[in-house]
Amino acid sequence: MLKLRLGVVVDAGPETDGFQRLAVEVAAQQRQALADTKLVGRCAVGDEVVVNTEAQDLGLGSGGFDLVHVNLTRGLDGEGLPGAHVMKLNYTSLQHAVIPVEGEGLKVPLNAPVGVFGLHGQLAPVAWAFGQATGSKGRMGYIQTTGGALSGGFSMVVGQLRQLDLLAGHLTAGQAFGGEGEAITTIGAIHHAIVDLGWDVALCGPGPGILGSASTLGHGGMIALDSVHAALSLGAPTLLVARMSSGDPRPRHHGLSHHTQSVLDLALAPVTVALAQGFEATLPDRHSKEVVTVDLAGYEASGLPATTMGRTIVEDPAFFSAALAAGVVLGDLATSGQ
Picture 1 (cartoon, rainbow, N blue to C red):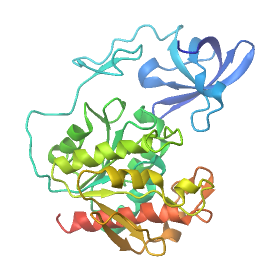
Picture 2 (picture 1 turned 180 degrees about the vertical axis):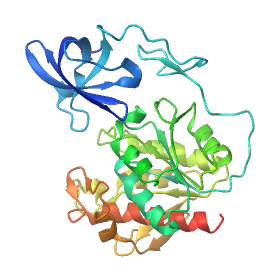
Picture 3 (picture 1 turned 30 degrees about the vertical axis):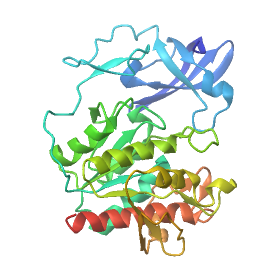
Picture 4 (picture 1 turned 90 degrees about the horizontal axis):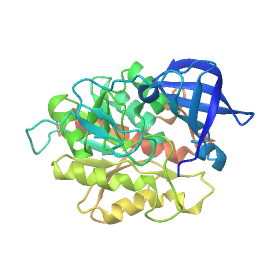
């Protein structure tokens, strides 16, 4: 059963990027909570709400807060989206209808590259380096997949990148929802982004808060394998953003992370991997690599997120260098007409 509890809102912040921060009193204890306003509406002080307390009770890091499941005071009059008929989060109590972006046509091969990452913290450095490489003339957009947070509004960095014109758009695919466009599948999102929206690069990866179990295959980063295959099947030049670390205390992530290694080992066709000078790695022979120079100091000064799991650029330069390298190479691919 869901771990649901009845509470009362005692403090309500402003709505930001589709979310509202709250303090909710549950069983005489004040707890931090979030309301996804696109799903459950806005909350006000005094509202009676039902919250899901599972993550905060487990002490999870990135998801350590309660989530409003329903607002009993003012959240029972929603009418859904007019004309929508395709469900997301289907057959759950949060199912809601959307209008999918997929059209009837199919155009292959695609003439624009696809970048695939496995950790949301890679998004900002990839997008920034792409912007630097193309002089802000290239159009890179983000396709949010499963593997992390499903709500499109949960990532503050997406809003920041959109405001800076470092992302041309934001689609949510599969069971991810709440983007500027809704796709039923990742492959459909890639096709729509490049054929219909005219993106020069489609960048696919999960939202914040990667799922993990310390096993080889049981983590959200493996969704990158599905995205790689989707891109390859459409004939798109495909680049896998390497997850690397020089500061992670876990040996399995030192150098080239086992997350990236597993995707490379299991991929059904060759892909390209970008690496930064000074942080190179050995790849399986069938894949290709591009080694480039990156501007680590420039990114650090950009004002974009510069920590990964609490570690700064100084403490983990390999992580940021690999993501920046991917942005550089994607910029080269986009401007070369591939």
